[in-house]
Length: 201
Image (cartoon, rainbow, N blue to C red; front, top):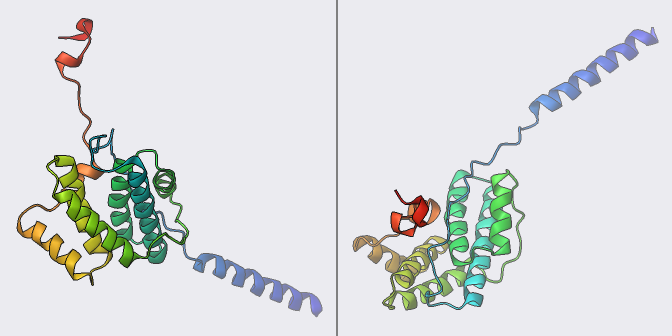
C-alpha cells in the first residue's frame, strides 16, 4: 500500500519540478550592437584636456550602464547606451569603463548599477554648460562635441528647461547630431597618394 503512494508522490514532485523549469523565464539575449568608432572623431586639437576627456567618458559610460540596469536591458536603454559609449570612446578610446562595458554588453552581460560621481540632473547641467562653451569655439570638432553634449543633457534631464531649449534650437536650426557618424564610422580607404610607390595603381 505504501509503495504506490510513495510512487505517486514522487511522480507529483517530478511533475511540479518540470513545470517550474518550463515556467522559468528564458534569459533574453541583449539586442546590442557594439559601436564602430574607428580612430575617433576628436583629435588632440579638441578644446579639452586628456583628463577632462577621461572624466566625461567615465561618467557617460556609468550613466549608460545604470540606465540599462534600471531598464533591465530594454531596447531603448541599449540604443541610448550605444550612442553614449560611442561618444565615450571617441573622447577617450582606451577608457576602461567604456571599453569593459561595451565588451560585456556585446556578450549579453547586464551591467550592475553603481554609484556615479554625479546624479543625472547634475551631470546634465555639467554637459549643458560644457557643451555651450564648446559651441562658441571655431573648431568643427569642438562644435560637434558641444552639440552632442547639449543633446545628451536634454535626454538625461528633460526637466532641465535650459538643456531642452538649447537642444530644440539645434533641431530647429537643423543642427541636430547625426549619431550614425559617431556610432557607425565608415572606414577610410587610403588614397593612392598615401600608398607606397610599389602599391600605387
